[in-house]
Image (cartoon, rainbow, N blue to C red; front, side, top):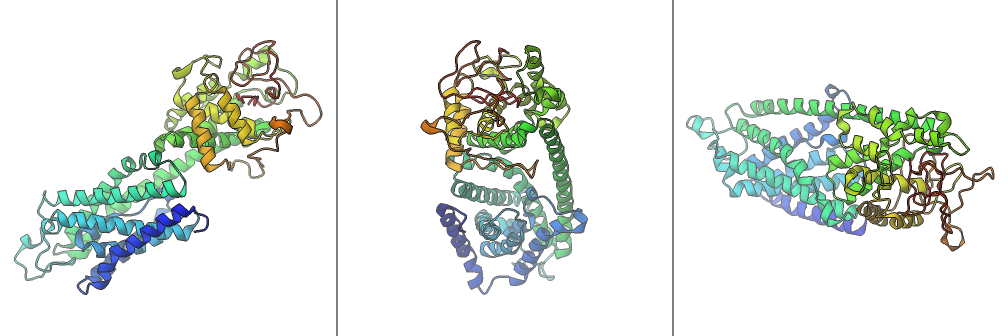
Amino acid sequence: MRVLPSAARAYILCAVLAACACIAPALADPATPWPSVGLLAVLYLGCELVKVCPLMGRRVPEGLGSFFPVVLAAVFLLPPAAAALVALPGAFAGTVVQRPARVRRVWHAAQQAIAAWTAGRIHGLLGGPAALGAGSSGGAGPPDPGAPGPAAWVADFPYAMLPAAAAAVAFCLVLTALDGGVLATAERRPAATAWHGLLTRSLAPHCVHGLAGLMMAVMWRSPYGLPAALLVLLPMYISCWVFAQYHRERAAHQATIRALVQAVDIKDRYTRGHSERVGQASAMIARELGMAEDRLEVVRIAGILHDVGKLGVPTRLLRKDGPLTPEERRIIELHPEYGHEMVRGIGFLGEARAAILHHHERVDGSGYPYGLTGEQIPVLARVVAVADAFDAMTSTRSYSRARPVPVALAELERCAGAQFDPDMVRALVEAIGRQGWHPTVTSDEDLQVIPSGPPADKGGAPADTAAPDGRSAPEDRSAPDGKGAPVLAGLPAQAGRPAESGAAPQTGRDADGAGAAGAGT
């Protein structure tokens, strides 16, 4: 718990206390159907542990989520407090890959217990148990064999669907509400964005799980009892397996993307790890803007692949130490178009393709390849442009030292409105102000990143950009006029314009051109 903010610790503690209050009546009530509670709890536990079953091939990815039909069947079959008890073992056993693991397990157990209790109360208030037809047994097991005919146990359809659907929706609402709260307290996300997209992503899966749970409950109360109820889980298990295959295919896509990034890093050795850091910064901006989770992943991939077009640029130009000729500059400025062509056939990238093509456009129209202005530039391209510039300024290269993060952010703010979209700059500043900048790069295990850069020179000026061998740094290779003039903060490059005092000129050996404003290529 020490790694969590105090607000998150208090929030989780409150959830645990609420969960204890939910299950307490079942522990104190002698009428609690313990055999049914134990059987359903073990069944839910087994469904969670089946994720590592050899039939699944490998461990199911974390994104698969929990197997909720059994919990929802307990909601329909048992009193609310007993249903909350059923959720505990499986929630504790759920897959957790991020630390602190114990705290996460406790949180999941409390969260699911509260959700099951709430769903059970809703189901009972709407007459769900009566609509299911409890029979003379009145419990969760099969009806009394002496009960008069099938009418004693057959559910009253379609009326049984309404309380079941309401319970499933309540279950989803409680889970998403609690998830948003823990995101707001543990990750310090703004309240406006902490819950954004959670309900829309979760509602349909929970309704499907609710339908399966209802089928299981109906079959459980039939004369065939538990064996028939277990047969309902078979289609859900198959769906689980298919979903796991989808995740593995997606992991294969990620491996392909990583291979492309490593190829770029090998070819342009001056920007090792740059692509992944741009992806991370792009995701921070997108999250701050409140983008949906699926779009957030697209913008992260766009940031990672923004420089993939370098594979089409001759290596001698990327590694050239001296000034570039106008013709050489035009060749390097083709890399966004090369990158767009390379990923054109990758369907799942979606908007990422446009971001790769346009991440060097500037809001004042002085960018390339098409000189788009303002809103003409795709949203994701404007996100990646800011992330690209930020990492170019805060990364240590062979010929220039990293600028401190506050200096780089101030430079971006100075360029907002001319070179960068002000909303994107503001989002990055706010995200880093709240979370800090802690880049993680996996494409090269030996990569060393200095996130905040070396101390600034006296007076707060950025560190010099002299090459380590004493030669002056090469000229900017991304200036739109092709003349190698320094690009000053917030201004397009102009031939013959003198550099401002204290503003480091853009360098060009990396086609990133991290200059005063860090307008990278």
